[in-house]
Length: 165
Image 1 (spheres, rainbow, N blue to C red):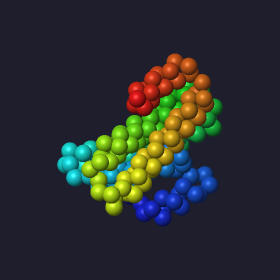
Image 2 (cartoon, rainbow, N blue to C red):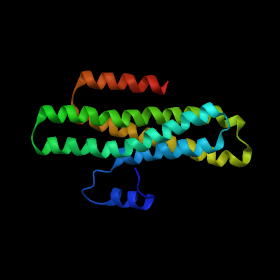
Image 3 (cartoon, helix red, strand yellow):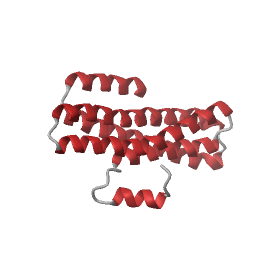
Image 4 (cartoon, one colour):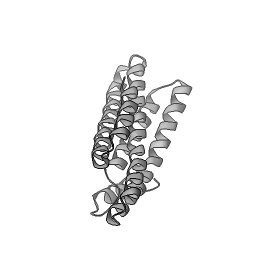
């Protein structure tokens, strides 16, 4: 994503835009990682948060592209292509979910080390990461219902539960 926040919001608000919930969730996770990155001092943690931030930024564009493929397959009535595209598209909110959970865990671990005057930023980072996680889960559940594959659903649910523990 190399546009301004204002341009991004315009794209989200535009009817017919493929930039939607998945991209917004990815941005939320990136924002949470960036805010926490500013608050912590340990170089290894800062590097991990920077990597999360960068990955989530790339997921913004990937989500829109993948969802466009899903819609294209739907419009073309190509069931096999649709199922494959939807599985690939589901991978993106899964990755956002995993990264958002990693940021939440990092927020909880960093809580004691952050000065009281910066605790509000920490709580904001935690809330953004939780929102990204919750949003991603909603998108994943919608995709799984749309797909209707019990085996794939079980695999994804196991993956998410392993992160949530």
